[in-house]
Image (tube, rainbow, N blue to C red; front, side):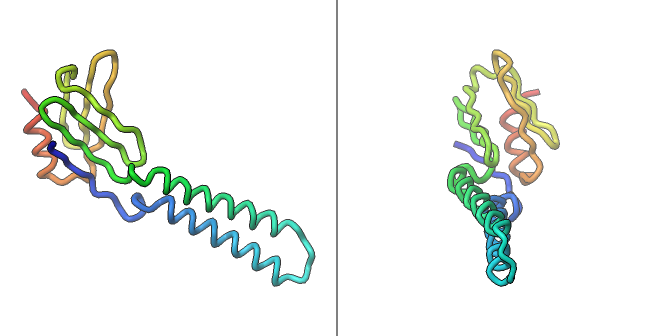
Length: 139
C-alpha cells in the first residue's frame, strides 16, 4: 500500500498528555494550598479531587486514542483508507468511488449513497500531494 502521512505539531500529537499534566498540577496546587493554609475549608479538597479526576480522564483519553495518533491516507489498487487524527477511520473500495478530487488544500472523496469525506492536505509534503494527484486526478 502507498501511504502518505501528515506531519503533526508537538501539541497536536500530545494534547491529551499536556492537558492531563496541567489538571494534575492544578489538583496538586489546590491540595497544597489547603494543607498550607490555616483555614479549615473543604472547598480546596473538593477542587483538588475534581481536578485530579479531570487529569486522569485526559490520560485515559490518551490511552484510548493511542493507536489513532497521526493522520494518513493510504491506497492500493482496490482500497482507499483515510485516518483522521484522533478521529474516524474511513475505508472505501476504489471501484465504488464516484469521484476523487485533489486540490491544493483538500482531498475530496465522493462515494455511493452520499458517502465520502474531505481530507485537509495542510501538513502533507508537496511530494506526497503530487503522488496523490498522480493516482487520483484522472482529468
